[in-house]
Length: 293
Image (cartoon, rainbow, N blue to C red; front, side, top):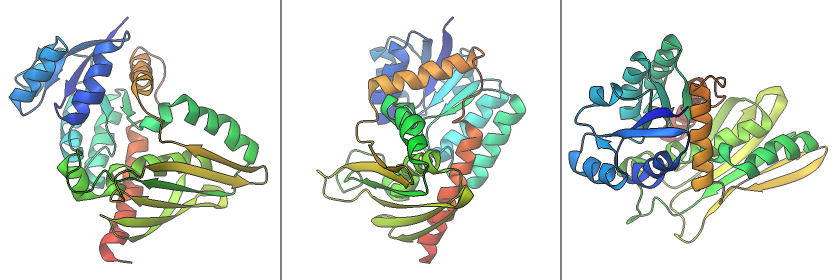
């Protein structure tokens, strides 16, 4: 049984990730698209032979679930409305513009008892899952380190304006922090230093006395791209390169598992509650950066 899913958003990520995956998924019936900008919506809908909706309520009337590809503050507001209407929600990360928005969205999901799933792309990769299930257990980790270096926020880049304005931590840093947490345990504290729109570093405290450090920048030389973590412990060390931990197969896995959960396959671990936790972590780190502490 397929699940009917509508898409909110018609920008770059909607066009290059969500719409093609929804259109090509055997687990999904792609209902159609709505966004505040009618022109791009019609173009994207025509490309995938689905309906373009004139209003958000109209989209909700024609689907069981909604996928979002809009800026975080807009996502939090609209996804809360969708959840209150009984629609499951597939969320981009970070899931809101601030902690208050994330709390409201998580509460709407909880009260409505709908499925929520966060698009933390790396966590749906076969290589990443093998690393977490096999290598981390072998090492019995004490600590680790991660880095996320690219030129994606340099002038003239193709990413959305809100991403460059908020900086690498609020854009891509969520994925790195989530992966360090998956390998070392729940994050219980974070301290940050550096430039939120340049190079920054994090010192991260995990539960049960484990620690990690992370370096991030999205304004490096354009051809530089590093995304990796390394875990250390009594069993040795293991490194994971995440530069290829995305792509069509990974996106298909994301939506297959979302559809399975809606059909009664159990609540995803990467849900709105996890998204709220990560939102609090990045807000705490970003506060350090803003204050220069």
